[in-house]
Length: 84
Image 1 (tube, rainbow, N blue to C red):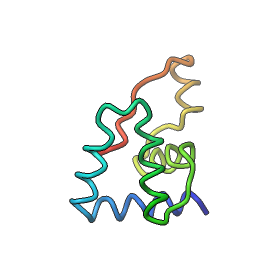
Image 2 (spheres, rainbow, N blue to C red; image 1 turned 60 degrees about the vertical axis):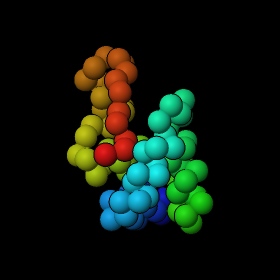
Image 3 (tube, helix red, strand yellow; image 1 turned 45 degrees about the horizontal axis):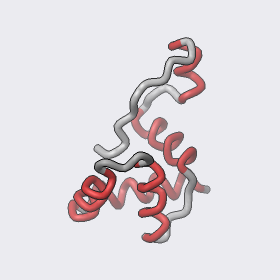
Image 4 (cartoon, rainbow, N blue to C red; image 1 turned 90 degrees about the horizontal axis):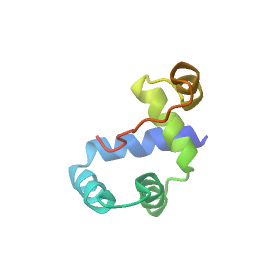
């Protein structure tokens, strides 16, 4: 399942300081940082979409999903920081 691939990728990132630094440096100034993360993950053998990444990240962080947030915030979009 793709969400499992996201979780495995995030686990790899959390355990690899050099990879963290590489992703953070490359994502700075990117207009699509999530797309950049997805592409970097594919190069490492992980296959998932940007939407699957965001959904898995929300589940891991215990956040509301975008759909749940829309219901609470009346559709107002916020900012997510995916590289922690």
